[in-house]
Image 1 (cartoon, helix red, strand yellow):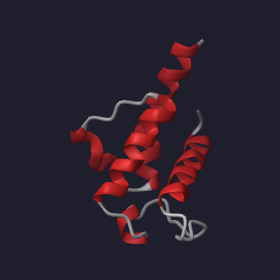
Image 2 (image 1 turned 90 degrees about the vertical axis):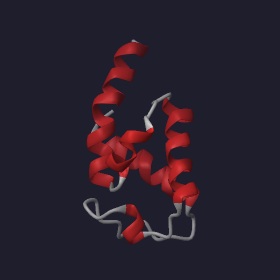
Image 3 (image 1 turned 180 degrees about the vertical axis):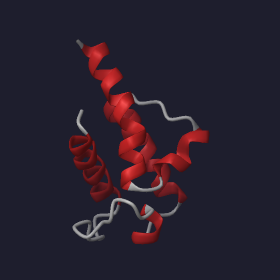
Image 4 (image 1 turned 60 degrees about the horizontal axis):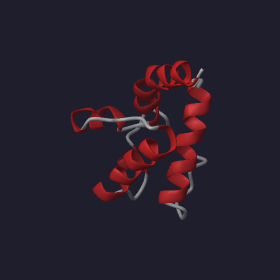
Length: 88
């Protein structure tokens, strides 16, 4: 998956978790929690949805790397490439 595709998937997940939030003005470099009304359970829902959709295992110690859209895409890009290689 490209970073743009990953971003679209994250936006879809966020829209499902926080349907009342306006995601059109989401800034990639600013932490999600500074822009949205996300609590720790919402964050875990993001992690669980990534696991469910893509079988991506994210260790708890890596959670800080999922703070913003930019850091999430950077973190997930190599993992998504690995998944694409495995699927072939």
